[in-house]
Image (cartoon, rainbow, N blue to C red):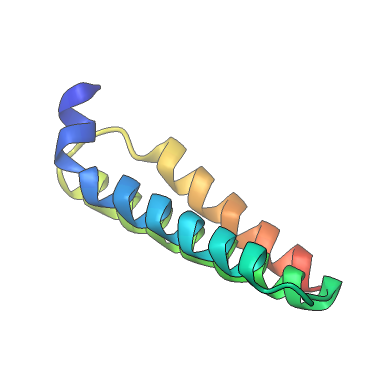
Length: 85
């Protein structure tokens, strides 16, 4: 498991930086409305889902476990779509 994390460190960095940037936007944007907050969550969930799918593709190419990463990515994208709908 630690070998997989060491090979895919970029995935954790992208997800973490995206979460920090979008959290900072939410905190610093003092007059944010609910609709704008939904759009910020949409951006985070979509980026998180796409990174999860990219991680699944990389894991599949290296013949490693990829199913949970794919499900994580698809659920993230589905959450983004539901949030906007």
